[in-house]
Amino acid sequence: MKKIRWGILSTANIGMEKVTPAIMRSAHSEVMAIASRDLGKAQAAAGKLGIPKAYGSYEELFADPEIDAIYNPLPNHLHVPMTVAAAKAGKHVLCEKPIALSAAEAEQLRECPPDRIVLEAFMIRFHPQWLRAREIIRSGELGEIRAINAVFTYFNADAGNVRNQADIGGGGIMDIGCYPITAARFLFESEPSRVVALVERDPDFKTDRLASVLADFGGGRQLNFICSTQTTGEQSLQVLGSKAKLEITIPFNAPPNERTAITIDTGAPFDGSLARREILPACDQYTEQAEAFALAVLGQQPLPWGIEDAIASMKVIDAIFESEKTGGWSKIQ
Image 1 (cartoon, rainbow, N blue to C red):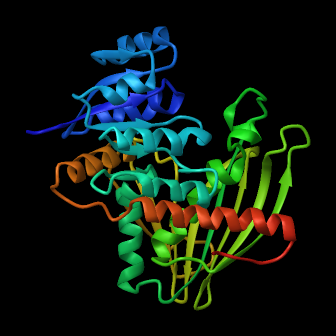
Image 2 (cartoon, rainbow, N blue to C red):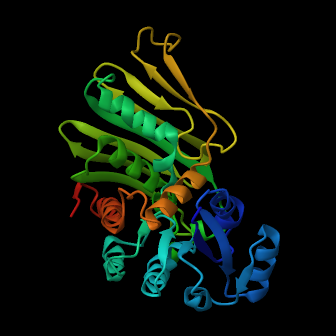
C-alpha cells in the first residue's frame, strides 16, 4: 500500500496530542519527521511519538526530499507564510484553521503551485456525523431549512496562551467562531451574503471573548451563533427546518473513542421524548481527515475543498469584525 510521508511543523499541543497521533493511524500515511525552531524540542517530540527524524528549523523540513506533505499547526499568523513556503518547496499542506488573519492574507495562498494540495483543517467535515446530518437535510426530512443555531465556548484567561494574544490572531471568533461558520456553509451548501455581530473584548488582552453573530444565507436562511473564550465550556448545534429539527449532540470536539448521536425531532411533544436518535460508531475525525488528504495526494479521490474555500471562510470572519466596528450589517465581499 502506497503511503504519503508527513512532516510535522512544530511541537504545538494540538499536533502532539491529537492530530499527529491521528495521522499515524491513517492507513495511507506515515509520519517521518518533525521540526521545531528548537532542535531539542523536536528531538524530544520525535522520541515521544516514535518519529524517525527531527529538524531544528522549518526550512530543513521543507528541504527534505522524502517528505510529501506538511501538517502546519503553528500560531495563526504563521499559517500563510509557512504554508506558502512549504508548497513552493514541493509539499502538500494541511494547515490548521483559521487559515489566515484576513481574507487578503489568505489570498496569498494563490501563490502556491497549482499542483500542490492545500487544505484548511476543519476536521468536522470528515466526521460521519456531519456527513449523515447533511444527508438527512438533503433527504428533505426536515423540510425547508430555516436556521442553524450553534454555541461553542470555553474558559481560558491565561495571558501566555496564543488564543489570548490579539496581535497573532487570538480571540474566540478566530479560534472557535470559525466552526459554526464552516458548519453552516457545509450544511446550507451555500455562502452567506451579510453578517451582523455583537462583540465584547477582554480589557487587557484586547481579544474578542464573547461574540454573538447572525449571518444571512439568503432565501430566509439564517445562522445564529455564540462563541466565547471566557464562559463555561459548551458546544451545541441545531438545524431547524419547517418539518423537524436536527441536533448533533457533540458537534465540534467529538470524542474519538466514543459513539456520537444525532437526534431528529418534529417537536411533538415539546419535551423531545419521541425524537428519533441515530447512533454513529466511534470515529477519530482527525484520522478521517488525514486519510482523505492522503488519498487526494495519491490521486485516488479529490478533495471538495481547497484554497478558495478557505478564502471564502475568511471573508465571513472579516465581515464579522467589520460589523463589530460599524455596529451594523456588513456585506461579505
